[in-house]
Length: 406
Image 1 (cartoon, rainbow, N blue to C red):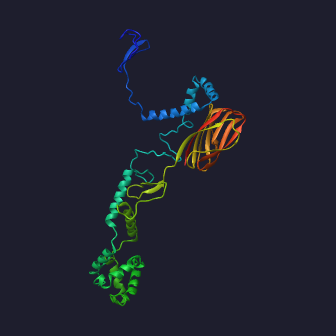
Image 2: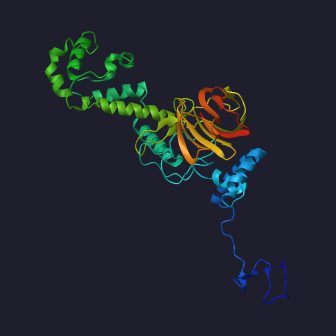
């Protein structure tokens, strides 16, 4: 309801009439204007920044009374409240509560905590992420080719085909059945006879086989090794696949038996692996599944004695850490990689600029000779261990956010 300070529609009216018109006064001028419509209420960017703001707010509430007074003092020099100054610093990237995500290169593992990555194009290069549509298309294409060319003949079908082929062959075999289909089957299944000899080896083997064969060939030499070689090279009886052809066909048949319903085995692969497409016409590859990730708020009294402290409750063994520490107006930001080395940026009493320090986890230095500094010790089954060194007689509470991945 509009709140009028003067008669309705007078030159001094102030307020909103329903949701359509707003009466206001700017620069000694009375204005009646249409109430604007907000078109991006609860947009993705608004919700993202709202989440970041709420995290910064929780950090503020975790500060001690002394720390809040220190922020108030620092904010006064900038014509800001202590809370406003703290929020402005906490929402800055590197170090702040977030990393810049628009463009650039991300380094290290990214854990999605069970959430999906959507909106990806189908892969066109070997190192691009797979999509369900591209994977299904590749599997269907692969299965169709394999099904047509490699359904694997049964032993009976192979014997029948050999008999039909022998009718018109220059070797003058009348029928395979004349010398025994059973014998051929027994010899052929898994025997070196079917490892595909070279032409020279085949001629020698035919001569040895002929001695006791029901076809009554005394020796291959009697009908001419030269003739057999000449007939074999390029003749229909010996139009064999090349080794590369056979290997490709065998691979296709192997995969097809796993893609077609009723195949030999279901598709299986090692635990903690995902199937990733390798592009059109290429087999997919296995890649590591996204790592575990946990975010926790930890605290430490600034006057606590030096020594090792183990932090637990993460549910897995981490392999990398991101740590953001705050005490008063001083804070640090560090990255620690799987081998325990890393880099820490700090803001101390001596400089408002961010100063890099090698291989430290948390560095809070509010005054000369006064500090709480930690280094990485180990990754543990349920968390990690830090070694703390206290300098001087610091007071207050140190709060730090840990993002653990593994």
